Length: 173
Image (cartoon, rainbow, N blue to C red):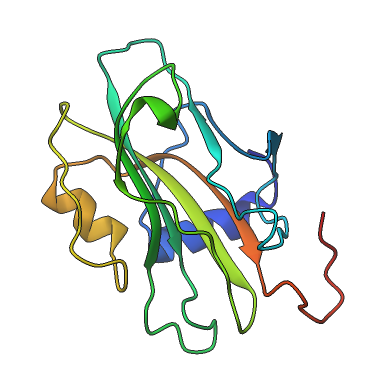
């Protein structure tokens, strides 16, 4: 993923934890990849994305989380991180459809402000070692990773999202 890496790295480090972009990772909505920091409308992200994971060993497994760092609004993110999606047991060299969906995809639908939506890919120590979190609200990627002995993110991507009729000078595609 390309884009403004310093903003992206700071957002991840602060909210999701440090990461090492060591695995090839691609997220596509409607078969279109996006660049980090781009603006996507809720209608564009209404359907679950395709997430492709690189690597060269099918015996390596990953957990994917998709979180909103700004829920319910960027000025007062009291539900941060809000978990939109979780897939575990994704083998390297495949895509998320080969994993186990622990938390079904819920598309972002911000009502106030511009929200940063982050995808983080974490390496598992072994298969079937991650379990479904109890709630979506106030999820913590860092705490979850520690609890299940997952790595720091080995790949990540993010986009900005605001309500469909959002005002301001931002351009959507």
